[in-house]
Image (cartoon, rainbow, N blue to C red; front, side, top):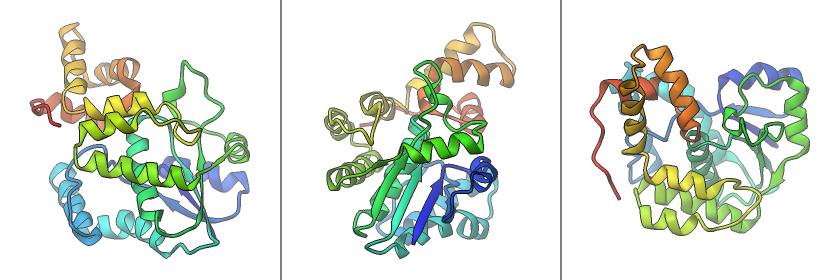
Length: 246
């Protein structure tokens, strides 16, 4: 069985049009924010559903049907199966990918990282935005297979992130692997995510930008590494910054 985990619904049509054949799963989470605790996977999903319900009035039943169900399918992966993880470079996507790798860590499946290889150094954090079917095929052709060490690293990164373990994230950031480009930058962003994004928003508004559209565009320019969408930036504008952690 071959699986493709897409980073969001925005890429579904381009993937279908690319002609790549496989079971398609869609990651509809934003694990970069909110409660990521839970002693079991079921508890974890209950906590995530509660977070989304609190932040956007998402019905927990919808969360289970549309979000958790996609991740649970990774638990059905078996030895000999192939899983292609289509994730971007920024923190938002990195954390979601780390979680997927952790779910796959005991499966012995062949796991591949598919990244937006058509981007350059200046726009690398734009990700799969406006990707074409042809570009998806290009990315798939250039995919990187994760070694057992890569799988262990991805799982360790997820655990360090969810435990808010800055020291461990800093230690892991020195690892070098083609499957984890920009890892040092991403880990640094993970460590300062509780404080720096809010500081950047305050800097933008203090420069005279007040409307949300302007703030969002400027935040993306200054802090593309976080990969925050409009909902994350909106919360930064409306909520007081959290205390530093770790």
